[in-house]
Length: 159
Ligand SMILES: CC(C)(COP(=O)(O)OP(=O)(O)OC[C@H]1O[C@@H](n2cnc3c(N)ncnc32)[C@H](O)[C@@H]1OP(=O)(O)O)[C@@H](O)C(=O)NCCC(=O)NCCS
Image (cartoon, rainbow, N blue to C red):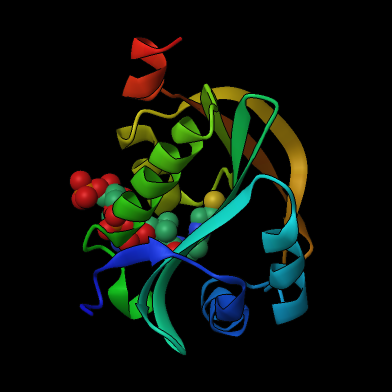
């Protein structure tokens, strides 16, 4: 399977997802935390690359007609080639298929690469949470972004 192929993650991927999360974030989630997230009702994940060394992940959750990206990351050496955008699209399509009308996420206001990705994917600002993150002890605001999701074609045909 090509490293660029995106597929749904199974619980068995939890260790590989945790290893990738560690490569992407200063405050990584361990295998147990990822396993717990994946077991939540409405939770789903997609991954790219070959376990145990994955290139990309997205974990999201649908609840009450809304969805949230819980985390998204691409291995540093694989960034800038469109993988993050494709993972985001996979999550949006999956969330819409589960009935979500909107997809939300929180992003640190100084995370410029991620902000460019989200804004060019149609996300827009709906809120600011001052001091939501701390980086080296310094408070950093979170921006809450929203993407309006189109209903899946079946819903239009059989409302
Ligand atoms: C944010 C992240 C997932 C993007 O993944 P990616 O695979 O590099 O993203 P893509 O290659 O799909 O880029 C999508 C867009 O983002 C922007 N972008 C991404 N990386 C960029 C970079 N290094 N320089 C400039 N723009 C960049 C561009 O606008 C790009 O648009 P383009 O395809 O028209 O050029 C990745 O940088 C990452 O894992 N960061 C660390 C973890 C993180 O911050 N996650 C988000 C938490 S909210």
